[in-house]
Length: 345
Ligand SMILES: NC(=O)c1ccc[n+]([C@@H]2O[C@H](COP(=O)([O-])OP(=O)(O)OC[C@H]3O[C@@H](n4cnc5c(N)ncnc54)[C@H](OP(=O)(O)O)[C@@H]3O)[C@@H](O)[C@H]2O)c1
Image 1 (cartoon, helix red, strand yellow):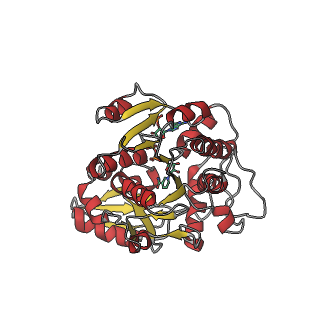
Image 2 (image 1 turned 90 degrees about the vertical axis):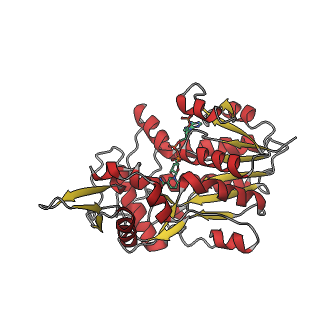
């Protein structure tokens, strides 16, 4: 019987990417993709490629027990954005607290607890699977711990790190887990988060300039990841390597200064970086403001680096030195394949 890979979030960027990578590179591995809504167009599109699509919800432990049955490998991640949205819609208090003042400890908002519980559900259900050889968890740095409590509101990082810690200590699972710490998605810039996108200015001669105003300093090296193409390669490498690995999922490092130059070379459109960030977080009035969280994330990255200086996190080159090939996309290739026309409208 061929091995079975179960992919949580089969309709999402990371899940779809892992599925496509294994279909192309490891066709003998069977794939089961999980979704909350098997009748959705996205799930139907996954099923049309031969994937066994199964209904499961990260909030529903029993659905995960059923969905993980017989799994040799599991790739799992949580989706902070949808948890925050759901939490807000039921009236959850999701204030991000203060930006600069680290003397006031911020109580974790409800969505933090929900994300941690979802990850623990994955861990507890996976630990019951006798055939399981590897669980790959999509994690991030423990910002609060790495910064000695200075940055205490980057909950979407800390929740994933808390889950990783739980998994590494969970009986029956501790020798089967590895993590990929996904870098900054390249898709953020073209399709995703509003504050990553550029705005366009047209001079009196009709010549356009793209102006990038992301929430990071221009000189900050960012570990970019081609989430659509490279996620599966990281997962495969972590299946092959011994457990307890923590791999930085980076396709290529690049500063935003370099980004602007590269992007102009590829598109032929003038481009520059502009630091337009407020130096203090906008007032959240008790509501959730992701920009405020990103500001603190940017401060953390600038001071401590993406992995917070955690010596246990390795870069792809280090796993490759042990004989595991991890093919990665060049950012210039991503820029060439992406359609930028809508960003310049
Ligand atoms: N953007 C970045 O630069 C970056 C970098 C590192 C890490 N991350 C993290 O990446 C995560 C998002 O990943 P993504 O962009 O790949 O996701 P995505 O494309 O937004 O898709 C989310 C997936 O999660 C599934 N899902 C959501 N809630 C679920 C639940 N309760 N039970 C089961 N499945 C559920 C959805 O499936 P259905 O709707 O079909 O059920 C969907 O497949 C976030 O947590 C973010 O913090 C982002």
